[in-house]
Image (spheres, rainbow, N blue to C red):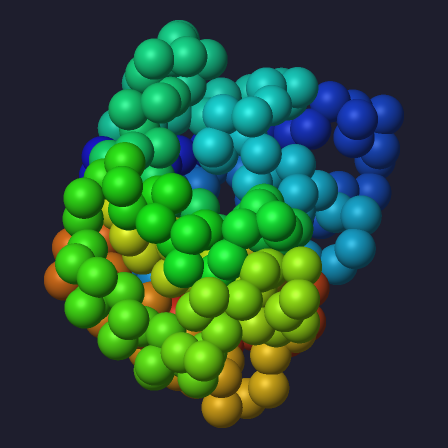
Length: 214
């Protein structure tokens, strides 16, 4: 996948609003593979909706969203499964990790499906992010910031053309945010991938090529 495009897209819940001033909604927008984007959003402007549309979890919007020019509404469940395994990697705002499993087990669920990273590669991520000592700790016993680091590692354990990171560092200090940003961008460059990051205020200090106001 080389492009994600939106044409006159608007969440249906906003249909009756006349005060939409957005760089995304009701605009023509294209995200290109190999580029870095930031979407800044205030609370209630549809950030979670946008992320859900991009990964095929919801379709309650007007207008068009397309991958490489093909309307995503034409995709079937099998198509979405393939895209999420090989083209779209997502770091969810709410993380969607398994609290009863350890940090290592949460990452391995993804990596066993993709066989994309070696155990040594994954352990290097744990060490770089300062959570090597938490490898065998259940997620329920980890702080949210530690869980965010686990979620990033999981997101990097697959091939992708685009990485969507929704509020990836909301609970992290500047040092850990910097390290996460570096790891994310190193992997994106290796894969020639695009990165789309969303934020409602606290985001990684990265060389964004385009900043959108949602």
